[in-house]
Figure 1 (cartoon, rainbow, N blue to C red):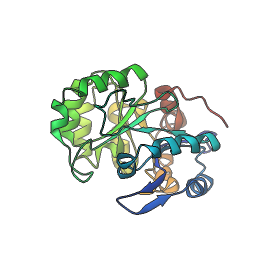
Figure 2 (figure 1 turned 135 degrees about the vertical axis):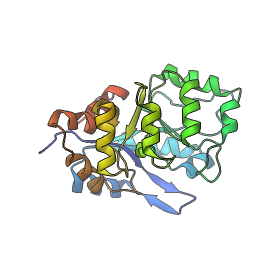
Figure 3 (figure 1 turned 90 degrees about the horizontal axis):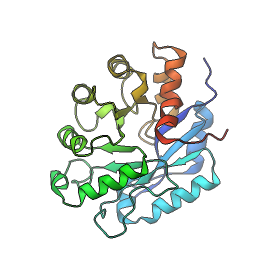
Figure 4 (figure 1 turned 180 degrees about the vertical axis):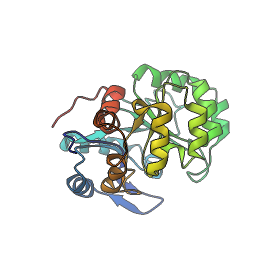
Length: 247
């Protein structure tokens, strides 16, 4: 079963200061070739983006050289500074990752009471672009209520923020909440599709923590129709981001 278009909606690019690893353009292109992925969303590593906004700029410049790379903007922790732009025009989405949390692993609930948060949310809404948000379940639940209607993508089906089944229970009736498949089991992916439909699930690999080939194999092996797999592999992404394909 072949697909002309496959978009990996969640991958990293560049160096990680905290982990000491580097995901190069060559590495991503090799994985594309091995897997058949045609386009890749690239996102900076959190530690690098927090330390220096220059990585967002370098990432964007890389996508200008590599037309199959799609830029997402890391939303930095200094969002309360004057003139802050959460997702500039040239990017197709944003990444929100344990905002001001502890060691990138624990949510900081004080953020939810920050007077500047509502202004940030309104700025994001005006872009019309989706945000990948990675936080604990309780934080995410409160954020979703504050940011009513904002298109959000929860990575790993919520796995790194808690129990995916609890995320599914909390957000199954929230039409603006989407999930990506990165690192999740095939069984869990299937349950999400059965519960919320294929329209709200996107394929992602989370390179370097997963590989395009192995993560894609789980989606391709799902017991769903060709048309439903097309939704996961690229149609949902195009609908969310209004990205114009270049093949």
